[in-house]
Length: 222
Length: 222
Figure 1 (cartoon, each protein chain N blue to C red):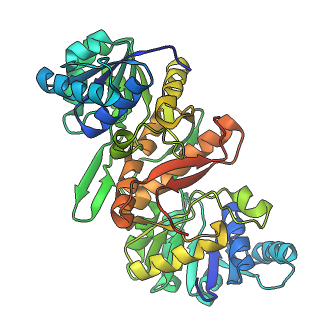
Figure 2 (cartoon, each protein chain N blue to C red; figure 1 turned 90 degrees about the vertical axis):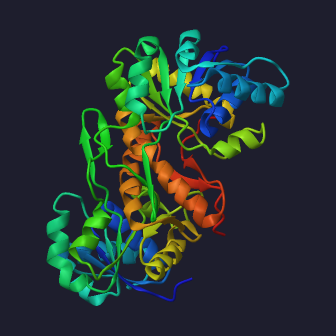
Figure 3 (cartoon, rainbow over the protein chains, first blue to last red; figure 1 turned 135 degrees about the vertical axis):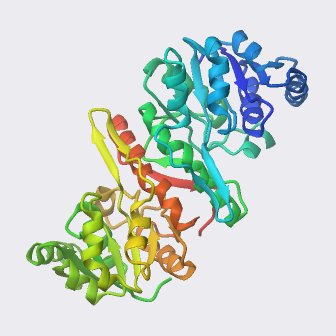
């Protein structure tokens, strides 16, 4: 397990960011919730604090949140992603940057993965070459994260990255979500496969009126 | 459950085709193994017959195999895929055509999904517009299919397609592999997400020295 980490959640007022922030805080990590609007971030931080019954989570604007933390989770929409990362680049340098960004399109036929040469995670790596970028937490459903404090035992967090040490930290961090280490899914470029898989999960959620998740068989991560 | 189907496995001498042919035959379906080389197809068919202890599987060249069957599984490499499908187009017209083709690249960094505007399944649909194309069986490991006759209970077969009736037939056919219906993963275009996910599984297989598989949580398919 990790020692307690200091984690900024950029886009922390969105459902995925809020849900992960809640789980990280519940596991004892220091969490700063970031948003474009610092006031809104503080409101959402208080929501999490109320839920947990402790005042540990604070809100800030995204740049200030990044400055306060040693690990940054990017939980923002794909639209405007490059601009957002560029704007935060100075603060992201040298840090572990986790991307759970999903570049999806939606139309009358439902959700689908955009045709891209690089994933959101790779884009972040290109824009901030010294960042230690890791892809993870794409597939855990926001509502499942938020609804109860119970670990999502039946799901797996798939973790990809080129910095082994950073990847290992994020694999440990996954314990706060599923109760077990995340699975090392391989190199950062495999984020091109992990990110749009979320379109398939959303599609199944609609068809089966459920919150689907991914589990990997044959890999024992305790 | 399906009544007994007549299934041609194009590329049936490769590990994935052979493994699926074995499971289909074991479940009582009529299977014709196709290969570029009819003699080699007959040899592999006999291997399956020996394993099952009945003479039900026959071998043929790919075109003859397709002609004999009402359902066709394409289990061929991505390289040469368009040419192969074009060559078989006449025989595929109007039939249920299942694609488990994975357009992957491999280099020193391991396996990865090729950057493509359309999946293999979509390519087949474009080349044979009357075919009832369904994507499925991408993720079940060839060795797991072949090694024992036991259903892969812990894994799920994800099925995508735009022809609901054809998709339902293939969901039923998945019972022969996992012991339960395949999951309706959505529209055919989501094959763009399902196919390259195999790169992630291969990557994990290397890292963990295992045969990984995919399971979906939250969807009950009995």
